[in-house]
Length: 103
Image (cartoon, rainbow, N blue to C red; front, side):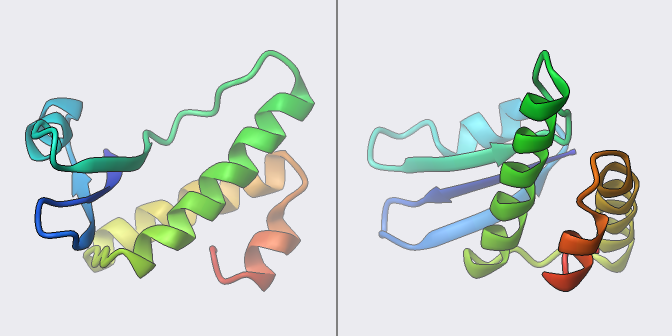
């Protein structure tokens, strides 16, 4: 599952949930669209600090996706909540995530 945000041909900011990157690329293929970010829910980094920083940025992008019009189903919200709760606990960010309404 991937969340992708972009600015479409009409200048509207949009965010959607995709099953595959190909679907996101199809929506943003036109040179008149501007991809903003994607969230693939895989934590990258070699060190603990890099992975923690990556998770923090992922959470910020996740929150901003809602301002771009993301409207997930209840199931998707539950999956995202579980992901951020599990990894927030793992990287010492659970309290911060709870305070910011991420999980």
